Length: 114
Image 1: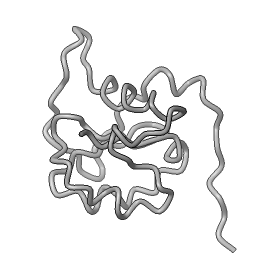
Image 2: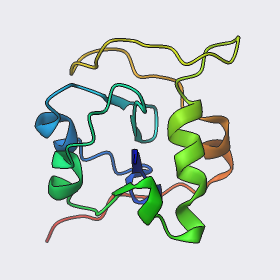
Image 3: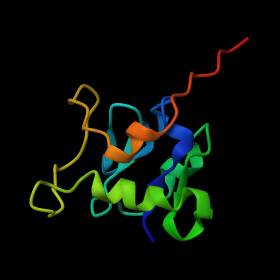
């Protein structure tokens, strides 16, 4: 079972999940974070801490979010279709390019705290 970041992260990018990941397998994209499918050890720490409830195991995804299993995996594929193994993400690293399917998804404004 792979952990997947879903649509709730798009344009929100809280990032607290990256602080709980013991193997640094959560990478920042332009509009959302992504979990590297082979670097993740499936501990679930990120799922338990996500304030917008955007992380689930792939076998727990609702039908409308099932595309995010594909998005999270494919964003790490190189030009030849092989999965790239970047070796862990650190704050300050360059953002990875978002999956092309995100371009067609509506932009969202973060909710303001009152």
